[in-house]
Amino acid sequence: MAERERSIHEMLKDTPSMNDSCGAVHTGTEGGSLGMGIGMGMGVSGSNSSHSIGTGNPLSMSTSLPLRNHSAPTTPMSPTNPHTTNGFLTSADGSSSLIRTSASKIDSLKNWSISTYKCTRQIMLEKLGKSQRTVDSELEAQIEQLRETQRKYLSILRLTRAFSSHFQHVVASQQSLADAFADLAQKNPELQKEFICNSETQRNLTKNGELLLNALNFFISSVNTLCNKTIDDTLLTIRQYETARIEFDAYRMDLENSKPELTQAASSLEETQRSFAHHKDQYEKLRGDVAVKMQFLDENRIKVMHKQLILLHNAIAAYFSGNAMALESTLKQFNIKLKSPNNTTGSWLEQ
Image (cartoon, rainbow, N blue to C red):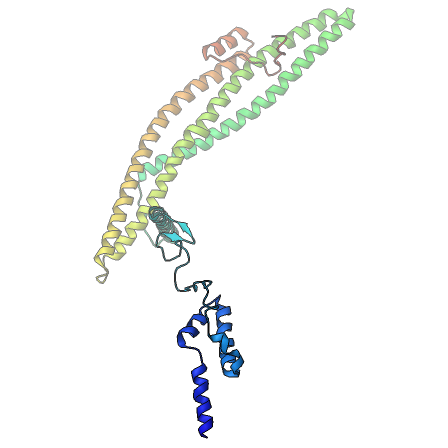
């Protein structure tokens, strides 16, 4: 037993010092140093033949590599930087402007949805007789009269176009008939005088018919401008006025329904009053615009139709009475260019 204890003490003396062990563990890479430490432990506990591994300085070479600290930040572009997103620099002003734009669009959509709902509800209640509408009897009578006038003028325009189309076929037939008479006059000497006389008559009718067509086309163009542009512009303002009237009545009904409610918040009531005042101002402004436009339109309509009706009467009367001079003077009086529908523009060489 004593010999065994003595041999254990001798083995402990032969073990390498702690400084040498530490130097051996930190040599090489992480895996290599771990393997060296394990090998040294095994060699020391195995036999005395491995005693030279722990002693000496061959293992304390300056080949040690620093261990990687995984807790340190890897790059300066880490997401912890408040001014970077996914490695890219971002502008705080740009993001705030984008947020403001999105918020304004959402507010616009919200206001439009609320206004559309209230207007639709107001229209349904008016049709069901459960809501009173604001009525301006004098203005609405004028609007209805204007729409009736437009319908009648459009009917006149349609009939005049039909007359012009039929008369154009008549003129084309007269032109063809004149050419046929002239051809027969060359081939029939015994009836040459009669054929020439009829050919000249048809040619004169064709010439006067083309003048009347020019007058008809001028009348059609003027009435078309009056009906489809001038009157339509006023009717567009009238439609805007009617929409403003519906919105005004819708917000007026909201304000009337909100007054009896005592539990309603003061801020909500003020917002309702502001909306009502805004739509009331818009309604009154458009009502004034409609009244002014209709007054100017009535004056312009009378002036235009007075001129066009005189032109149409004089041209038709002169044509069917056979007064070619009066027909030409009528077209010159109204500064109408004489354009023949059967004439074609020559080539640039002829010009």
